[in-house]
Amino acid sequence: MDTAIELTGEQEKFRAEVCELLCEDSVRVAVARSRRMPYGQETGLLDVHRRLGERGWLAVNWPPEYGGLGATLVEKAILTEELILHGVPDTVHTLGIDIVGLALHLFGTEEQRRRLLPGLARGETTASVLFSEPAIGSDLASLTTRAEPDGDGWRLYGRKRYSMKTHQSDFALCAARTSSGPVAFHGITLFIVPLRSVGVSIDPLWNLSDERFDDVTLSGIRVNRADVLGEVDDGWQVINRILPLERTGIDSAAKAARLLDALLRHAATTGRLAEPAYAQRLLDLDARVRAARLLAWRCVLNLRDGRPDEVHSATAKWYSSEVAKELSGLALEVTGLDGVLDARDAAAVADGVFDAAYREAPGLTLAAGTSEIMLYFVGTSGLGLPS
Image 1 (cartoon, rainbow, N blue to C red):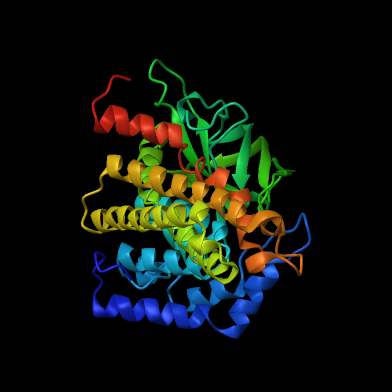
Image 2 (cartoon, one colour):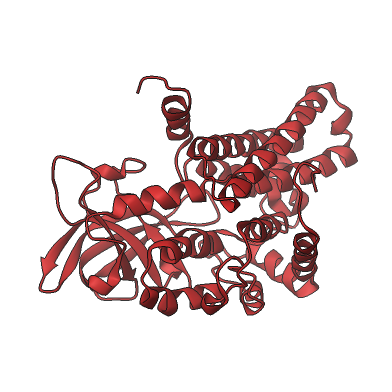
């Protein structure tokens, strides 16, 4: 633990208890099995998620009535960090708890919270996000999915792409346009959409990572006022509030730390650690991985103290994801062809961690805001450069 990150005794105890659970043989076996699933298959919720949920740890910062322990964002960051450091698949948890769950907690009605949050917190249900479209990624103001009035509700029509875990999710948070006008950001509404319903079709978008993207078509599924998150036509305010909270960089920094630890162990046993071609680069990346973690934790502490800093969040997200990406490239240089064997191969180096990291790395610089958008935001909002 870096001395610059000061935790209370209770928080250190919480970290130790989480580590104890994640180090159990049954958890380690399940995690290893999830990495060796046949091609085209992937894990959703694991038993460890439900065990964490039973203890109130999965959404530890939520109030007890919603399945948490009423702790702070520090405990939540500790859990996220340890899940990643122990290799537990994290996407389903990140989407359900850190994004959709957070949005429900901040902007949902009491009925919505009591109906949806406990299942997420117990690790029994999960959720995904339907924001991006075929030609629209970060520019959500240009989205074309529409919500057409239908009596006291709406019917949704449109197509969403690059949505992860939708095929394994129970419901999704969907952005659709309910009105149009001169202000592009106005007229967007967020809907809670049940995914196992007539009017929703989900097809795979296969890619190089271990988790597929989904292509989701909405063909008139009906939603009503109880399915609206926040206010009608004001969904951009919800999105604008939750995205910076997602951009702490904790996940990318933890992935970089796990990868670096495996790479240093491999380099030490093979003698590569002393080679001039790699020694200085590994030393430099070690410092940058530590810096990424400190940047991420500053975001967490800012949020805990009620002082969110969107420029710092964008900086931390950009920096940590780019460091993880660069490190994944160096890992394959150091390991050579052996490093491209995945976990399904008995001869894989470090259980295939280098191969998996390299395939995942580009997505880290795209999800939750591309590196280009993060730099643009830092330049315009932080440095005052012209847009």
